[in-house]
Image (cartoon, rainbow over all chains, first blue to last red; front, top):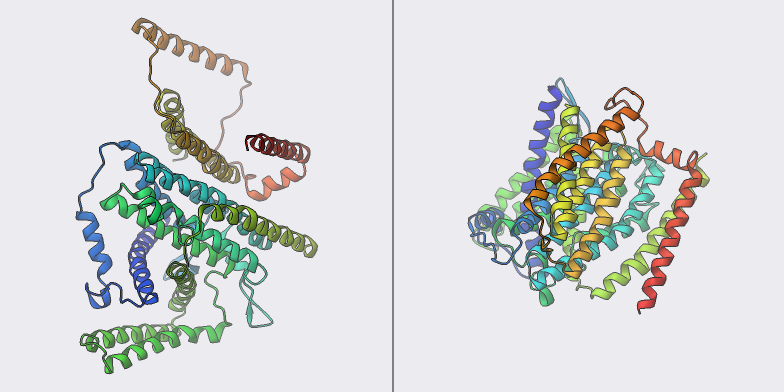
Length: 396
Length: 166
């Protein structure tokens, strides 16, 4: 019974945090791209557009859901549901932190650990293509169909380099479980270089991230929804919440890909510096952010900044104080430090995703396929062979 | 609990299998086949074959069936009309005969097979990736290598056939 209650609590927390994060990820993306293009982005709803996701959700829910008359209704309605469900499932096997003990309860900061966790994520993501393909086909629209076909061809092609890139760190760590994978990456070489897989496997990491871009249909691989050729690709005929479901699936896939990259290559929640130094980093980061915000609040560029920036600065300083206080409470420290480093790494990778979208153009279709089969696939194969040879020579 | 899960997913597998044959639209049939494979994967998982379950989903549901669906969409195959006229008399008698035939088959199989104790869920522990890998590269090395040569021949054959078209 205890197990059931703890699992329910953990599931509720993870679902709430994940869904909120997905909504705000979209706000961050719009803001970052706006600043790359010298615009301000969402600004009207709330201070600096902070309530924009809420307004978007209300808009999407209250909008009329149009079902075109010529669609295959069952599959048309099933596709967005399938896409979002499969995109959200993967998060259930990803660990966010180490084992913690709160009072009488000892539990992992993870919903469940499978011995085949990595295979589970690969399996779910390989089924995820049906949502897009079905949505494109059931819409009974040439543009949608082309988008769906492009998407499924692209996802099948890039799954190969992705799988081979994943296999190399698996060989090193000799496990399929995310927990053991992170344990394997703990510790430091020479006392200061973290033992993350990214250093021996830099090639695999680059291939994984590139294939991750393609698997999530992001720029520069967003041919399934190329506006100038295909209107909006597979979701042309979708509106209201059905459209939002596809959108949410894309962002959830982004979070999953970056989280898996963090766990496999960047050491999960392990800090990049040895113990006493790594504790100071979050305090310094948040305190510095808070002080900068307060400073700009003192010299406001706009009228409203007099109130919003000092308030944001206070929040940041409060978080810094919380991290400082957590140094005295071991339980709190374990949770906060793990979350800080894990979310920080995911955040940096997500920022790279958005950065690339803001700066790079789209591939042509033949370039996309040639890149996958002639460059990426042999490269990841070579990486796997070299890793296998190294493991075979070093292990007794 | 395990029996309940078994019954649910066995039911889904059988339902999807029947649906696969009954449906007139190729896409609906293909999706039913994916349903069969997915529920079979869950049954493997219950029996302790976790690696086989994952491989089933990745290879069959995630790769082979995607190609099936892909081809069906590319050819834009529509629903097939049920033009064959079957008299209602033949249909009802057919159902009865089918039930009798299935009952006979299951009776014969039960009578022929030696009495064994039932499967206990969770009793088998050798289904991890480690165990499967060990078995593949020691006991079943020859069949494993022969299969890979067979797949290689199939790949080369596919290349040759595709090459001719250009």
